[in-house]
Length: 427
Image (cartoon, rainbow, N blue to C red; front, top):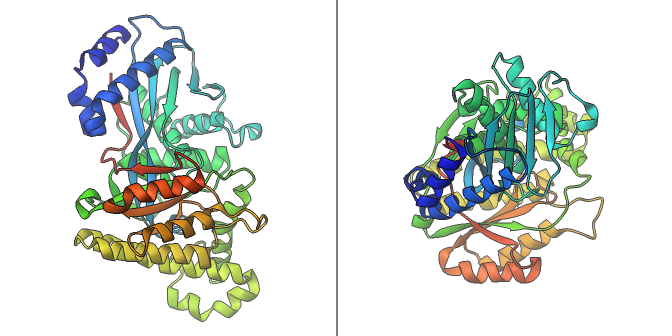
């Protein structure tokens, strides 16, 4: 749609029915946000009223079960959330991708130069270059475009702001040049490749898959090239609960090595049995081989491997509880997962800086405020980022104010599950 027509369409309320499946009761506010996005695009890139304009949205995600299980060919349970990254896009004929994200420096990638650039590691240009390179390797047509993005996905929060960005970039290229043919799994795999190879972070696939698919997804990664996905309907409000994500305001700077050590130590444990990942080693065989793993890899590797097996089993139990509508059983397993992450996976505190333990502190506070109800756990990769809590609706106001009193105003975010993944909103 031409830029001028699209602005009028959004301003007239005509887009409500198109946006409602994604934004629900917030469709009108979303239309206003998209208009603002288009104006910011125009202030960054030259464009006329007749410019061919596309609008996209990719959600963040929350992990519901399986903490650090996906990268070991295990099981995962996750959901997309109502915080998203949106993009206004106009194709260009320059052979260059230019992406400006609000409050960030532009990312510019020339399509005739898609080789990995080590100096870009850890940057947005690396993610863009990685997505473009992988699509090219797979035989997909790509081209140049200008894009302006804004996001409500909390950075460094375990809500997967980087995965949302990767999947968004892949979705843009797929629709602009490939007629939107890629499946959610394919979008996710391209995003994971960009993050693993070009960005330099050894993440699993669950983050990108949740952002691409939408809703609650149970994923079996036994075959990582073709993961099995099942959507699980969940209505938190119908069960009387709200989902809260607590920002602990701790930096992820210099924590890449801490994150990387988890899959590394799990793989080292698996290698003791001649396997590449723990998902290939039967639990009974692991238990019988603990003395050998301990000797070769150390106690922490044994503990992290033990967490993998038990949290992997909990994903199945959580999924079954949700399918039969037993939310209290689901919460019981959330609590168990949280204890296992703290005790065995050991991704709650950065032990190089024992004076500062914000995740552990806010877990203790959340436990106190919940008073035996609901559940809370470390969220996502751990060490910094966020705490996840399922809060009874009758306790929600007090919970939010209690968290904010300690962590700072605006630290406790009340989210909802979004049932649509990465999408082209309007064109």
